Amino acid sequence: MSHPHHMHGRSDAVVEMPEGRLDFNERPILVFWESTRACLLSCKHCRAEAIDKPMPGELTTDEAKAFIDTLSGFGRPSPVLIVTGGDAMMRPDVFELVEYARGRGVPVGLSPSVTPHLTWENARRMRELGVKAASISLDGSKPGTHENIRGVEGHFAKTIEALKMMVGLGYTLQINTTVMRDNVEELADLACLLKSIGVRIWEVFFLIHVGRGSDVRELAPWEYEEVSHFLYDVSRHGITVRTVEAPFFRRVCQWRLADGAGDDPIVKYGLSRLYGRLSRRLAEGMGETVGEPLIRSARTRDGKGIVFVGYNGDIYPAGFLPVSLGNIRSSSIVDVYRGSPLLQSIRSAAFTGRCGICEYADLCGGSRARAYARWGDPLGDDPACAFEPPTPDQPTVTL
Ligand code: SF4
Image 1 (cartoon, rainbow, N blue to C red):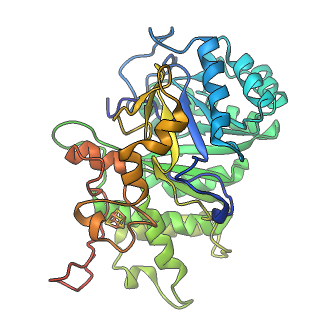
Image 2: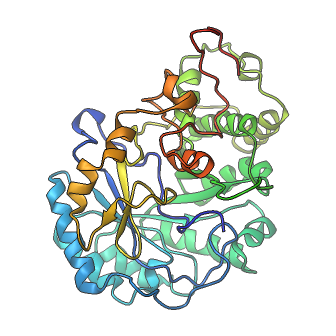
């Protein structure tokens, strides 16, 4: 298992909003709630076995409603409640809770697992209750790749079917992909596949490795850098791209946005064959014509603009950062979000290591979850970032 929580509780940046109106010290834009840990899938990067019933300690219906009520304490505009899991559809009261949240003016997003629970009837009912946004995981452009990662034979075709169904029902659909050694070479084909199905938002998660030793599936910082450049290219083909636990994508975007028309990124940034292959495949699949990059996003990071509530009510900066800040059964999530010294440090970009001296600390700030996983310090630097900020002694930028 690579991390304690399920895949879905996560985002560096999601909602496109005028940033001036958002004070992330006051309120998040996204509150992730791991409504259950039950899920019929057993994805490699999530957990070893499927869990077919609730875990002890999950919030009851009444506790969940009380939790939804407390969100009004953040004021308006209300944060979006992202109901994740596990598989939220495994909660028998999920429709009741979504209806309850909508009745209180709380927008709801869903991230269902593709299982027999995700029927047309259920998806339509959610849509009728006012759920507009949903995200579904797809981890490869080929069945074998996706199914090897997801651990279920035939799951690729079922996922494509589910995607088409959700697009047909009018959902704003987001695809979540975990980039790793197994699928990095398929990213361009995957982007083309998304576009052909009508999916316009792609959220790409950069693996967090927890524990000793190295993870063979994890990419090296230079590879992540090249993937970030490739994702910038994708964003110029009509797909909104967001990264999760890879906020240095915003640094890359800032660089690329400032490039002149004649600049060749391979030359300018010293990129190598991985980027070359991916960008060539992308051009083959989507054509050379490109438009404005679709990367507008709020400058969120774990604990800044987003917060995560685990299945047992524990509050975390994000789904991949297992530092508990309190529990909603005994503390107000509003007080915890606003008053936690750790979240205040994260929001004021009070980092150490490279992130501490980096000029992009506020724009980016590195993955707090990866810093914690590597250094045991949620304010440390992000080991997946390839950028070496110049120090006073060495005033040159090397990459
Ligand atoms: S050093 Fe840290 S803040 Fe700077 S770009 Fe890399 S991850 Fe972001």
